Image (cartoon, one colour):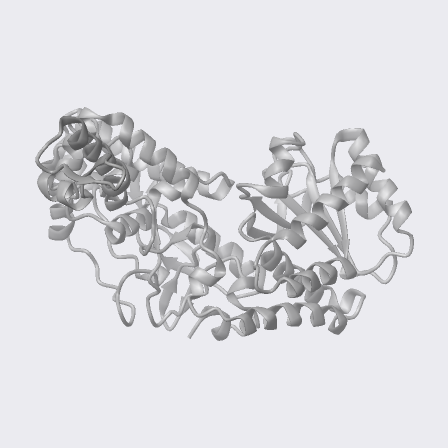
Length: 491
């Protein structure tokens, strides 16, 4: 049973920020430290900082000859709390014993990749070390950043009113402040006496087609060089064919070259990279461009057009079912969260409800991490020079127009460190010209960008998505926001 079903959230994967796991069966998803390291949102950066803290500490101990300490700290268990992994059926929950952890550590030592500097980050372990692949690196990553996942789970449960159990013993996580493994007692999500950790869907990967992989490195970079060398040296692997024009065409079969050098083996990749480090740098740069968050379709794998259309229709119809006023304020708030998650993933992630700022003196209805790698939210910082690490959302389920007090409230949340962009979400407006002029005043005064959106705006975007159902692009959202921003800046 999925989390959304168990807690009657009435939300599909597209409307949720976390992976809607089936807590009785593992999903074939994993965490990859390289993907985490290239993400720009605050949550990922903080989690990656903890991961690098762990590995750099291990590396420093190794360089100091403290091998016993390195081995003592290189430990992890299979993180059954996330319900992610490669088990075919059920949640294995099998701990990796001391002997197994010792073997994995020994693989790293035997590779000499630490000693010669090939591995300078946890990202490179699975590229150069035998018997370590996606699943074990994912387990290690999850163990190290477990505290971040605990805090994320708390925030998501708060968002949906899911009750947590107090004083639950956690499994170990890396304490980057004290440089040690630590366990604690926390508020935890517990189902059937089993602690559960929710994972942001924006950070998970699938093994199939994942680019940052030793096979991809070998095939698309190492073998490209080796084939060129075989041709240049005119070796026995070079084949000649006379064309009708009389021209002689020379070719080399890539797989024959791979067999000659055993090019897919990690031992060869280590040797090659020591001699040609630029090729590994090029591989990493290429991976950074090609890697992106999984779409909801890729997470679910059984995502039909009817399913997608059903979500759009439910979101559109939801507005008419929510009355204005205090009594339905929470329903409106929850509906906007679903709309924002559906429309703006993967650009906006990790929504936190009523986030406290300024030591709790002010509260924000909703705050998102800006994780955009292109488009409107990315351009806020890079093109318009507007700080936007977080995107704020204020929801007003009013029967009247929002006015200066409400806009002042949102404007007061902004700062260069947190961000200076926010949505003022409300039901309807009788005088849009005055509203846009007020938003324009805030932008002219302090370059604070308030984006007003009402029911009809969400319905307009969702309706446009229905018209472009088979394209599955974010063009309707991007076009609307670009036009809205244009109106405010030029008002």
